[in-house]
Image (cartoon, rainbow over all chains, first blue to last red; front, side, top):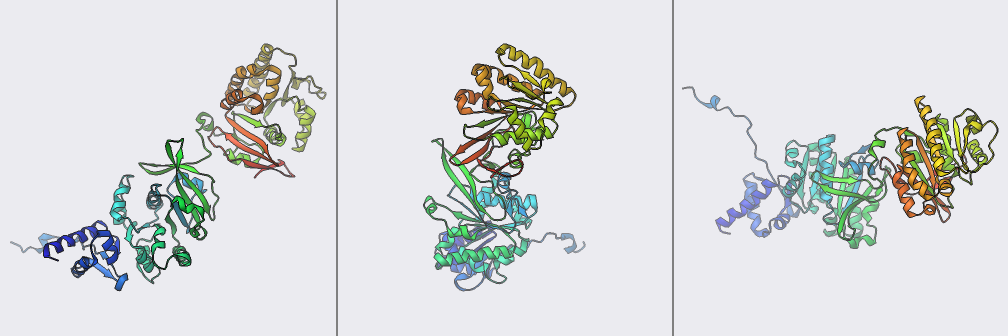
Length: 85
Length: 474
């Protein structure tokens, strides 16, 4: 798969999981939901898992993926980080 | 303890709601609103009863459900952010695997939001899983039911239903604690109506029959069968008087509405004696003044014998001027009743009208001023026979209007078949309530076909019993 196609499929996966934060799906399930080949999805899911965007649970055919909500910093005080003039 | 379904009408059908911890099959053809009903059960559970819930969807995308439910004003994402709801998109095989795994996803999700209710949409997909057909499928559903019970979850298992499936009872019905069926039916040839029927529910009484529902902009709204538009001005008075027949009082929401006119439509074979007897005796006991117009076949001796059965001494009542009779047949009355019997035999209709207006109405007005309530028992067949149909059609509405204006409760005996369709239709329209009793085969039935507060009933069997009121509705 060329890099551009890889990116486009990565975006598809990302959009699916972001829009459905409580989607728990196997690679076979994602093949049906996205209408994409398993062989094309495998490297994408591996990459998103490696980046900490998705979480993989279980092994083999029953391994499933879910979206990992990014940690949000609720409060951040810029002024405390700045050196006094 | 009952769990509200989030649909007021359905709660009434279920006598308050679904027994807590039950696993219910919700079945219906595509387009019947199963997903909406399931989500309404969760949404209202969270918002109105603080019971978090999980919706498992095997085929639909959760974001499609968020969007669809927005049209009812339900912000599901907001509930998810507040950890009160989860809309889980999952494959059925993963769901089943995780459900039985110790500390699996199912347990984690239930604990995470302190879940009390779940919906699974849909269990029909289990049968497409390898090795999950036949006995395995049954065992799988049995396991699922036991797991949700273990967690004390009140659950709806959605099941797709095609018309082909109706030939046999699915095994899911035997395993589940209850079955709710949604249907789409042809109505008046060109319309379609949606109906809901509870065909099974362990641990609660159900209001049987098919109830019409609509999918509105606020979700599912169910209108109970056996209910017609209310006579608001009468039902709002909210004063109910007992009939002496407890089951009939229940059907009438506590009893007959005070100041309403009820018709007892009886066919020639039906024995109405104890229906009238029980109501009559109950009114006497309540201290009502009674005005009676007996039929040609019912003598005062017979009425006396009937009232004796209910422990009422009408002889004494007549002497005390608490009981009055209008007599068309010049029959003998016991001594001492003179002031209680109005003899109207041979009276022209015009004179009879004047008599009613001057004598009876004067008497009622006088007692009303002394705060005495009246009850009238009126055999309308006698008026048909003695004064003609034309007289009845002309005067009945006037008389009932008078009775209502003085808060007089009236029980009118009539045989609709005998008086003809047109007169029956007029009488039914003029009365506030109609009880119908008839004999079919070896059984007698009673049905409330009209009442001021809109309640109508299914036909009940009338059973003779050895003690007062001598009849029971079964």
